[in-house]
Image 1 (cartoon, one colour):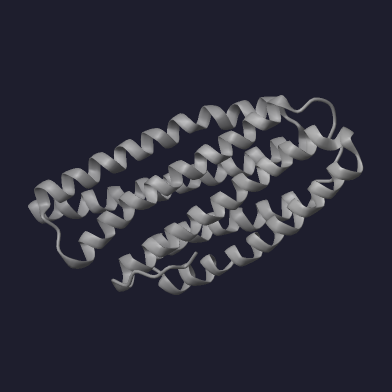
Image 2: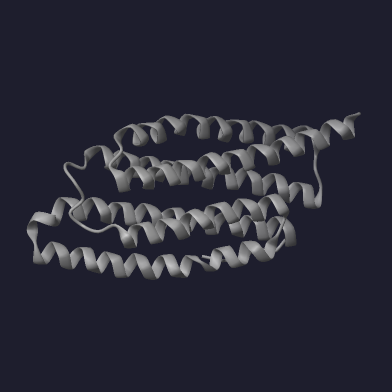
Length: 216
């Protein structure tokens, strides 16, 4: 009975991380859609969803504390528990960045003066990184984690090239400055989300192989 209860708690911990990842991914997708369409109502929904993510983080923290204090897990289970706690922290930060993007949507006045193609391309890569990092966690797939983290190079390249374009636009036309500055902040938030996805991938590799790799 004790062993069954222990397995149930481990399964609960995993399911909370998986559900937290889904909500974080939905928040990111909605924040970008709200940015594209300047949908204030959708941006408000993203902001409201942050409470759910905070609740998941609290549940994970409580669950890991219980497992560590009362069950004295060994080896692979211990790595699963500690990796899950760290992943929850990364997911919470990613969700905060999605909220930051949603907040920007609320302050943009009028229509976009600058094409969003580069922004949406970076967002698409970042969303895939988030999704695949959680999939790697769910399936204990270290190789998928490594492949997913490698996508960060593409995000970084697009970040710098798009940042340069926005700066040039501001130099050429001062009326674009407010819009361009907002998009530079969005760029930074997406780049940071990708970094946190890399952190998750590092946690997965450690969980599966007991190796601490720097994938960022």
